[in-house]
Structures are given as structure tokens and as C-alpha cells.
Length: 260
Ligand code: 13P
Image (cartoon, rainbow, N blue to C red; front, side, top):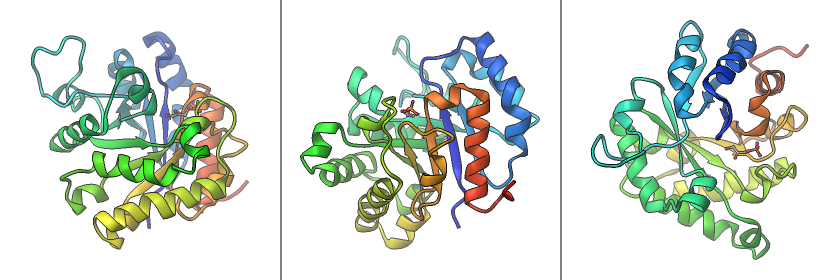
């Protein structure tokens, strides 16, 4: 039984003051939803303030990126040593980091290893772009990303990871994948690749989210799929009522919260 996990990726949005207000607006309602892991991923400057607000709750905190070294001459970077005092999760290899900041599977692999050394749980993003999708390359692209990102990791390490399937064409476009389409990629391609690289038990243990234009109206379609364990939510995670609703519906669909 995989515990559902809903994470909000705030991307480059919210000042410290705005972040505090957003968390205050949703933390008690979010905290009350049983049986779903909830993670907020604000920008770095807001982590300390949000950490304090979340301390009396079960809501966890994540960062959106990280360097693989512990310290040193890397101007502008943030290390796992710094993050482990603040949060429990870290998003790695988001398509925006790959697209705009030149991140590679090799770099993501280094970051995953560094995160695990410091007991941070990586949320690893994979997904194909529109051209690759239309050319029928989804499977090749994603299995390649997984092989690169997971290089040298043990089965035990892989079981503790969160993977997010985020088709790039669905991110911020208001055009999500279908539940069935995402389920097929997650089950056949992502779990299939992990089964080939490791074993079926490992493929079944890892928790896999869908991300891309998730909102309160479509979350049920994704959460009712057998292979989908959660969502990585962008835009809708910036609105307190929407994010609470997404988490609540997820708990209802997965059976951890009675339907109203
Ligand atoms: P949107 O939910 O805004 O499409 O963003 C998805 C995403 O990239 C989350 O990491």
C-alpha cells in the first residue's frame, strides 16, 4: 500500500510575507486531511518562515532544487547540509531546470545521491516534451531519463524515492494529460523501467505522482488511477482553497477520507 502524496511546487512565486499568508490560509484545513502526505515547496527565502508555521502540523516542507556538494565555492547555490535543517523533501530535475538552467540526468543523479546521504527525500521529475510526444518517443525519453537519474542507486534507495511524471506539454498550459494516458506512462514506462533496472517489488514500492495542469476539477481523474499515487501541483498550489480541495479529493478517492 503506497501512501498518497500531494506536493505543491510554488516555483518562483511568493515573497516571504506572501508565503506566510498563504500557509496561514491553508495549514489547519490541510493538516486535518488524513492518510495523505502533504508537502509544500516554497522558494528558498521562505523556507525558514514556513518551517516554523508547519512545526505543529503533519505538513512537510520541500525545496525546489539543490546543489550536490555540501559546501564550497559555488556562488548562488544551496547545499543539502543547508536544506536538511529546513526541510524533508527536495524536487530534483524539474523540466524548467532542465530547460532553462541546463540540468542533465547526470547532474540530477549526483543531486539524488547527495540528497539521500543527508536523508532528504528526492522528488524526481521526468517527462517528454510535445515534439517527443508527437513523435512517439515518450517511452524512450522517459526510460532514458530514469536510467541516467537512477545510475548506481540501490533498489532500497529507489524504493524511498518519489518520482513525478510531468509531461512538459501539460505544465502550465491548462491542457493536462488524461488520467488513463498518465496511468499508462506511469505503469508501463516508469514502473516498467524500474522493474527492468531493479525488480518488480521495487517498481511497485516507489511512489509516483502526476504533474501538469492539475486542479480541483481534474484531480479525481488522476487519483482514481491505480498507478498514480499523487500529484505535483504548480499553479493551483498557490491558491489555498484549491490546494486544500486537491488534497481533500485525493484522500476521498484513495479512501482515506469519507466523501461528504
Ligand atoms: P502546473 O500545475 O502549473 O501545470 O505546474 C506543474 C508543475 O510543473 C509542477 O512541478
